Length: 191
Image (cartoon, rainbow, N blue to C red; front, side, top):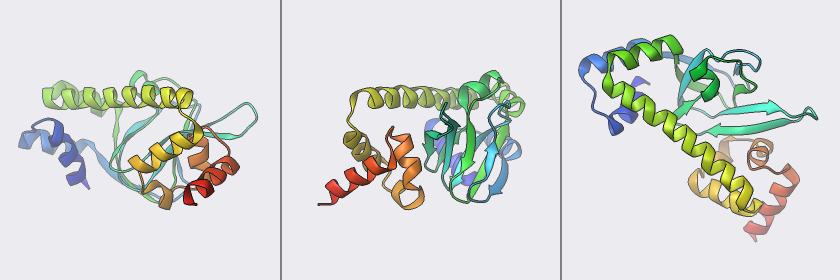
């Protein structure tokens, strides 16, 4: 499992054997079952997660009590409520395993320690958080400028495996529509 993490890191920065060992020491392997909430809203996120296997989502409840999915992570990749994790503030989102998941997790103090010990890991950490900011900016723009059908097509082109692993109601919520609208779009595209 650590091999996937180290492979991703070394695609961006060169790591010494010592830095690789630090990563293996600090990133704790853990598995969760399907539908397990691993970080709850109204608490400070404890971990940054690396998704080795499985699908994870961030969601919150709107004022009507409906779940709103704001992020779906397709492996491999990192996920947490980023701003709350980095600032150690209370999150308003839940982090849930959509499928059974194999993850690596690291606490904020451990991450801070790695960053202090290694310029390469500091650079990689900055890259991860830049990717998160960029992703959120693109997502906001897509929700404001693309039609529902365009958002769906973009998602399945980028992450085709999402359809086999993530329930339609989560995909619809993530795309800013209701499940009936998504079903209608899918039927039209399949004609």
